[in-house]
Amino acid sequence: MRSRSKDRRTALTRVDDFLTALVVVAFMVLVLAYLPSGAPRSYSGAAHVIDGDSLVVGTVKTRLTGIDAPEMGQMCRLDGKLWRCGEAARSALHEMIAGRDVTCEGEGRDVYGRVLAVCSVGGTALNERMVRDGWAVAYGGYAAQERIAKAGELGLWRSEFERPALWREMFRGT
Image (cartoon, rainbow, N blue to C red; front, side, top):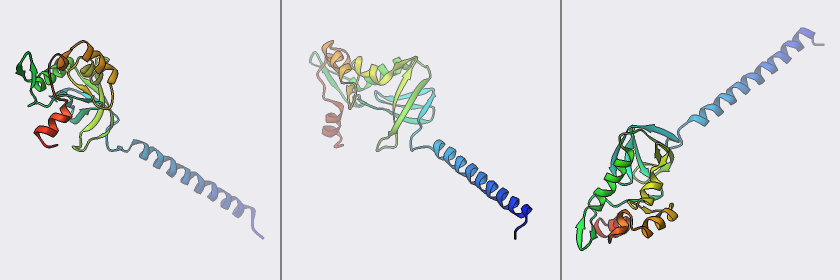
């Protein structure tokens, strides 16, 4: 026959084992919840504009998702004259940021390893504003903003231009 003290020790050992296992599982859940998913979820900082839809925020290379701006070498035609619409799009994004910190919500990565994100400055969504002001076209999002820009002949829409994806295909083979 077993003694009562041995039964208590066995019961206490089981409780200790259960609590230890519970703590280990809780710790693992917390660690997994905070592991990076391939792209930062939320980040902010000083921004360096690369072109009309790409920037570096802090140290994170970022691509504004849902939009496509002209490439840096892309030219558009206005009143029969060529103009550097890619550079104009970059300048527009630079002016929107105006040296302020940018906050981004990451949504994954593109084939070049850049974080795909919706970014804002001072409460203004940069992705949406670039399309609404006519400096980028809708590329999987912001179709209503593109219609507004086109109707108002804003930014690119005051000129003749190739959509950036088509321009890349024609001139870069990508």
